[in-house]
Length: 295
Ligand SMILES: NC(=O)c1ccc[n+]([C@@H]2O[C@H](COP(=O)([O-])OP(=O)(O)OC[C@H]3O[C@@H](n4cnc5c(N)ncnc54)[C@H](O)[C@@H]3O)[C@@H](O)[C@H]2O)c1
Image 1 (cartoon, rainbow, N blue to C red):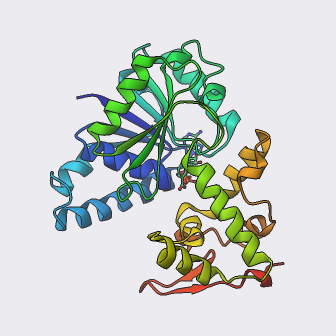
Image 2 (cartoon, helix red, strand yellow):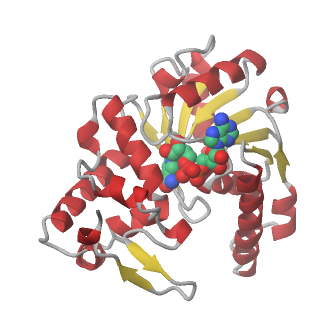
């Protein structure tokens, strides 16, 4: 069975490591921040135990956990058949990482990015083997969400693209094939448009956060509405993605309003810190936040 290296053990990296381990792969998980790595390993323990108690994973929670090996650096990379980059949404950081990985990994190793917005062709631009660079865009929380966009960069080979679709199937996830390398791919263009409109309506005082979310739930069968989705994803991540879109000249794909910036400045980063567009209590209560009070 192949080895998988996941770089970046935050909200998404931890989830990707977990589903890869659930799929039977040996997973190495690395982060520049040892605390993030520790926190994610605890989260994986909690999540696998919960899924096992509901009979939703085939192996025991312990054997899934044992297949995830935290590592301090990237020296294991040459021994991995899959490397998935899940660091901050920062083009330079990701490009440099791919350049370094390309120099040390055998040419058979697939180098994948979980970027939300940056074209894969740009991330591969400093590598000598751009044909092995592909986008694997998971959705969070990864152990709960089955969708993965598989993105073909302009230079991704057909063989690597097919292998990547097969890899995602082997995890029990559903691969949506993105055949042209455009900013935002497919799903974030659609959900970004909904979020942009929702924020505009709330900012103008036309609707409340709660009514927008409830409306999308009752009227369109969305499980949760755009504000709760944003809180789950992390508003700091949303802001970085919005900035990445702007840098690519595709700024209209995300919210233009300054609210997101103000929310992040006020430390309202979403569910992970207990406050975002809603305030969250440990017993699961959610109270909408009045964004018009933001300075
Ligand atoms: N949050 C979402 O819902 C979501 C969904 C799909 C894709 N993404 C994308 O996934 C990526 C990560 O997002 P996230 O929400 O997990 O962010 P996060 O902030 O939760 O985690 C990022 C992690 O990367 C680590 N890191 C940063 N630079 C690093 C480096 N050079 N080497 C190793 N580790 C490094 C950080 O310490 C942090 O733990 C971004 O590209 C984001 O756009 C996020």
